Image (cartoon, rainbow, N blue to C red):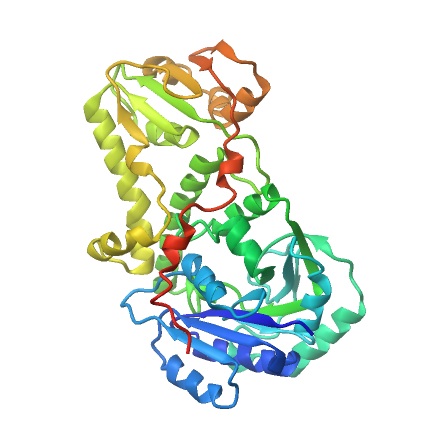
Length: 434
């Protein structure tokens, strides 16, 4: 049997989830052939001390404890775990998961080559709407009430159904370590709260990887404990406030996604270097400006006060909700932001007294004409502007009120496959698993 490194991220209020996951790995894999790495990102339950006790009987367990006052976040710590792995095949597991029978054997059976990224199927309590890639079956919503034996029997029955593999990608997943770093560069850490997985799906497809989901290697997933915290599904005020904050932070991540890919989805479409030049010829609605800026690489406006205020709002929103979500002070964020991938928002809005064709695609708009008789058709045109360019020839186009000059059609999507400067984000000397 080949060796696997199982990589687990743990955080506050997740001690019992993590211990249950370790138990299932011990019971349902040939664990002596493998390695377990656990990244304790934050801890309020003496998780580290409990895991040191478990390590006495499980020497292949290695632990890193984050000693910073704030969590690092899964977008980074997944790569930190993979980087520390001793084996070629790495499997990422969230702490709120329980692996099923012969989990390792079914992973290895399906990892036929290093072009494969394998997703392990999820069995979940019915806390989210049903979907084709998972199974709704309630074995409990906490480790304390989890029906371990019933779950194991269900997994064995599921495996005897011999369901065919399907296409897809989600956590938990297994991948070759070399593919993760050399082809992909890990998660794009400009996405700090969400959307990094959707971004990864597009990049995997562009890299030509084979994304396979197997039903035989499966986990029980308590759902959202890692992302939203324990008891996220309850209806008390504290939980509701936290969920609202998560939604606001997610909305900012969605904006980042659209700025990068030109749309939201899991399939790449051509994306171009677009500059939009907006002639401010009357008072503005900043909501409209904050909508249109997502669909270009740089938005130029000829009113310096408007440019400065729009830039301030975008930068503030892009950091404010994520920092609250992770309990980062502004000072702390400024001290660690260099460890995250740079989104380039500082140069996204620019003041330009005169408009010149600086980009492959240059669009001139008079603000008054844009909002005059603004309708769904006009909105759809902007939101699908990359598709219009893809279908157009080089040269000037006029689609009222847009004046478009296409100088070149260089698809940028290939440049986005591998995260740039990923090596700088790892900070190898700091993260030592013991």
